[in-house]
Image (cartoon, rainbow, N blue to C red; front, side, top):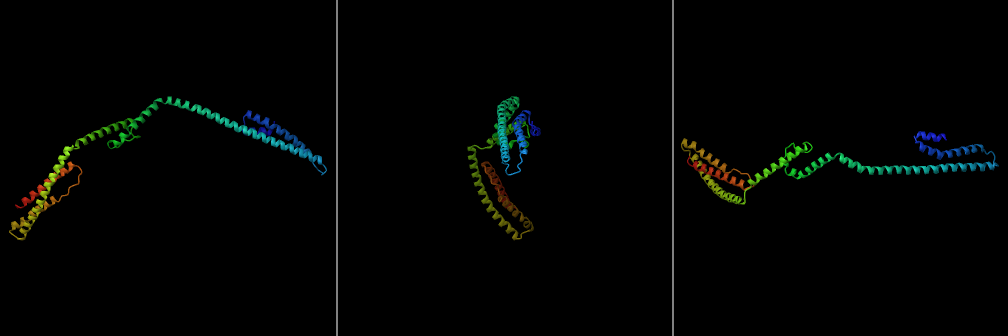
Length: 281
C-alpha cells in the first residue's frame, strides 16, 4: 500500500470505505511509476550512436505519460462520481424535507390547537370592530390602544365608546328641529329682524335729537344745576349708541339666529328706553 495515499487519506479524514476505494484505484499507478522509475535510472545515453537506449528512453517516457493520463482520467471519473454522489445526497435530503414538512406542520397545529383558536377569535373580533373603532374614536379613552390594553379591556372600551356614540346621536336627533319648527323659527326671525330694524331707525333719530338738545343746553350756560346735569343725557345717549353698535357673531343654525334676533330686540328696546328717559333729565 502506497504511503503517500495513506497520508492523504489521514490528512483529509476520509472514511475507511472511501479510503479503500482511493487505494485500490491509485495504488497500481504508483507501482507502475516505481517500475519505470527504476528503468529510467538504468538508462543513460553517453554517445550519439546509442540509438537503442534513446528509443528505450522514449518508450519509457511514453509509458509514464500513459500512467499520468490514465491517473487523470481516473481522477475525473471519481470527481464526476463524487459530484453525482453529492447531488444525489442533496436531492434525497430535499425529498425527505418536503415529505416531513407538511406532517410536522400538521402536528404543530394539533399541538397549538387552543392557542391557534384563541388567536383566530381575537383577530376576527378586531377585524369586525375596525369600522366601529374609527367611527367611535372620539369617545374612546385617551389610554385606550391596542398593544397597551388587554384584548378584553380594549373590547370593553370599544363597547362603551359605541354606546356613548349612540347616546350622542340620539341627543343630536332630539336637538334637530322638525321642518315645521324650522319654518316657524324662520318666520319668527324675519319678524324680529323687521322689528329690530324699525327700532334701530327710531333710536338713531332719537339719538341725534337728544345729542343736539343736550349740547344746546350746555352751550347756553344755564344755571349751575342745569349745567351740571347736562352731561348725563349725553352719557346716556352715548350708552344707547354703544348698545346699538354691538356686533353679533355669525351663526349657522336657525335656532341660534332666532336667539340672536331676540337679543337684538331686547337690546334695541333697552336703547329706546334709555333715549326716551334721557329726555326727562
